Length: 289
Image 1: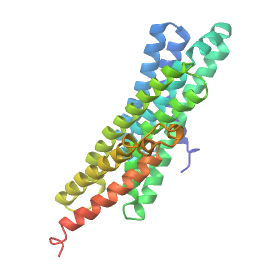
Image 2: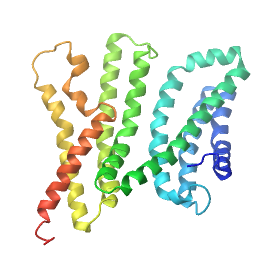
Image 3: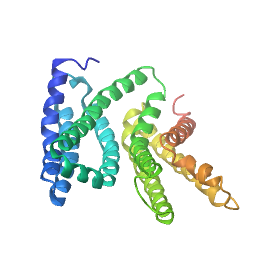
């Protein structure tokens, strides 16, 4: 894992060259249209260009990681996109005021911030795949569990964390009623997003990650997904049937077990994966004799 490799540095530099100008240009022009277009192009090219390169790279540094690196980049980039959106749009008035007072230093600072996000994601792409391969080499369901948690949990986890961190810091500048409504909407968005990503993770990732016949893999995918839906909704059902509105529920409501960043995905994926495997083994035990 040598990031000082010349080929690695070349990849990093030309990706920055293809991704950064859109966002920087939009910011420097500094109109509502240019800011919106520049950021959208920055986010779009930052997603598409590395993915296409990783998919079709046949030689050079990191070429052995192939599609794994492309898929990992999608997850990391979309996760950080929520972080960038939260920071940029909520602190835009402050950034705008600073830009009008000191255009060159602020433009350089924004360019460095964008470059930092791209750099961090590219490093995480490589490191994540290497760690996954290390776990997979040990055998068992550990690699499947880690992959499922990563695919289903990272995007909603970072989205919720960034929103809550900004809210705690007072960056949203909302009155209590509006803030409560906004946070409930965020919780709903995160939960339903987790459902969609979990189903994608089971149907696409887990099917190809498992070993065995096609029938066994399909069966395990289906039952694992069913168990996941069950364990995801159980904390909400418990919360709805709990009497009273005690103050402690603002911090320790049972429903948080299904949406708490990353940790919720770890326990839900672990239970559903183990249960799905157990049911599949029971169904196919006679055919294995």
